[in-house]
Amino acid sequence: MKTICAWCKKLIKEDVRTPDGPISHGLCPSCAEKLYEKFGTPLEQFLDQWHLPIVLLNTEGQVLGGNSAARSLPGFHATSKTPLLPGDVFECPWADLPEGCGKTVHCCGCAIRRAISHTQKTGQSIKRLPGHLDSCIVEEPASIWISTEKAGDLIFLLIEKTPPA
Image (cartoon, rainbow, N blue to C red; front, top):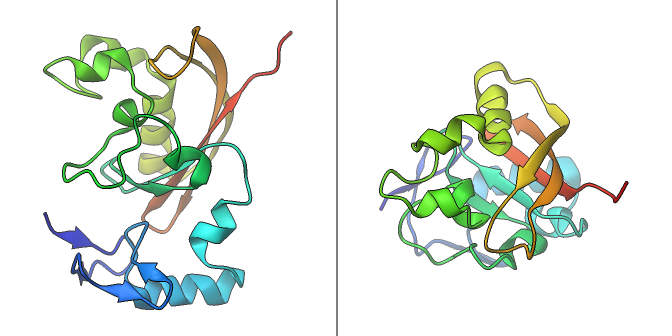
């Protein structure tokens, strides 16, 4: 599988390492350095400040990485050789059907998919779109808020559990 930098589109070889370790989040060392200069903090460290799952996606909606809260989700396979989709990460029961995440009859109503698609197509952020998470990682179906933000060719996806009423 070829890995391409989400910003500059250069080919990233899987064995390329930065001084801090292997490349993560689909950025080449040059783009990662530019991001570091902009924020003053490496991206992973910056995202790990939040205790809610933040998932990074490319323009095809494939998961590139995430913060430590996202990486700790049971469905988040950082070493997976096949591209992960949000339904895989959040262990959506419909993602296991032969059609896969985003291609079943159930997916048209998925608030996570709708938010990601809207932000991909328009560049507009979504802030706390109400949704529902019915997956193997929650004991009971949960009401959630979904937020998305586009930065270059990356989509940031934030999932928050809504507070009890």
